[in-house]
Amino acid sequence: MNTLPDASLPVTQSRGELVVIANRLPVHRPTPNSPWETSPGGLVSALMPILRERKGVWIGWAGSSEPACSPFEHDGLYNVPVSLSAEDVRDYYEGFSNSTLWPLYHDACQTPQYNRAWWAPYVAVNRRFAEVAARETAANGHVLVQDYHLQLVPGMLRELRPDVRIGFFLHIPFPPVELFAQLPWRQRLLEGMLGADVVGFQTRHGAQNFVRLVNRYTAHRGSGQTILVNGRRVMAREYPISIDYDRIQQLATNPQIVARSQEIRKELGENRTIMLGVDRLDYTKGIDQRIRAVYEIFKAGRHTVKDLVLVQVSVPSRESVDEYIEVRDRIEKLVGHIDGEFGTVGAVPVHYLRRSLPIEELVAYYLAADVMLVTPFRDGMNLVAKEYVACRRDDTGVLVLSEFTGSAVELDRAVLVNPHDIDGMAATIERAIAMPPAEQARRMRSLRQRVRKRTVYTWASDFTRALTAEQPTGAQPDTVDLNRSTS
Image (cartoon, rainbow, N blue to C red; front, side, top):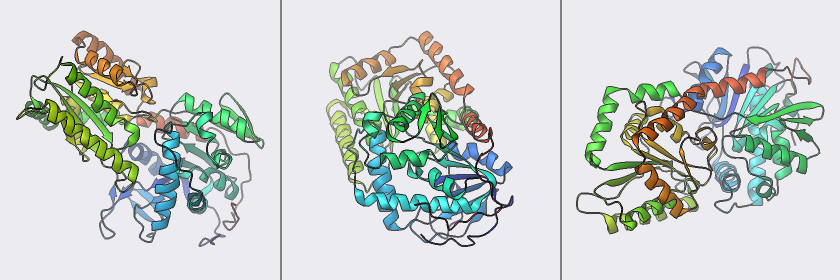
């Protein structure tokens, strides 16, 4: 293992009292010479105030295979870049993280690849993150490890720094025993997560799956939300993440955005019911199934291009990966087929936008849409559903939501649908189109109350409060040996 710089440096309060470890830094830049910009997203927005208040540090990859730059401060936050080579990106990120764990954790809706050559790079990169965190965290500090890319970091960091409190949060679903059991490295991943004091999941089912798997595949035992690990208590429970509700509300009342939404309605046809889908271009999102359901609606003849239209926004993702190229091509062929069969000169049933939209434009589409279609095969939470609800201040609109999203647990007043059932989904969408205004209002009021009650700031506060609730019981050294092996 490489020796870290300043390996015998004393751990003092001048280091990070609260450290976030994520695959990516909260900042980005188009080129190595460009200035850093804060990345958009609720996670960054929620954690930034807490990090600034507590002398926080954010550790992550800068987003390119260039040599890592030195730590730097941006917008009141200390950023520590971790370098990833082109081979690391290929094997750790695109390989093990996104071709093994990602499809497996999403119900294996695409066949996971168990490539032995990817495991060693995944271990090595996780160790690199753990070593940097061990160096940067203050004595008795607190560390928040984010997501599936870094599942080994808690255990590695626990060995290096037994004095710190560690939290791990998984943003995607955690699979049941029958699926997770396929992993050749299942015990190592579970042991890695058990290095944390608090292991957070989007739903209760995820937490329960984790406890069951620990009982089956490790020497440790858990009951309810508590697992005993060598005399140390590990808490496993749900912390459903959410959105910045107030910000979305402010955008939804912005006169320019409201005017833009009216312009969108006029462009699409003011007498047409507007359906909207907004997704990352990913095989887990079920975009092709959704378009097939819309095809069945037009085929049945109860709606025509004169009264109904779908706008599908698909944000490009991992476009060099074969599976993503295939799903992109499949969707584009379906759009061409439905537009060719049911479109007329000047009007088509599906408008397909393969691009990322600024949040202001996205909110304008939310305001313009009568029916929001959120129908992934599996999703940890899905914040698009919550953003749509937050925009509907007049209590109009209908949310059609996959029952296999984490959001369906909270947003049970949405119209729930099984995305695998094309005929059932078509019938459900038609029901949403025809829903009386009074029923729309009842459902939307309930949904907005749920989203308003639990925001992304609630999530950040709840999770950090759980992490800081108890003091660590392990060693509390004045000096930490960062050359200690984590193998």
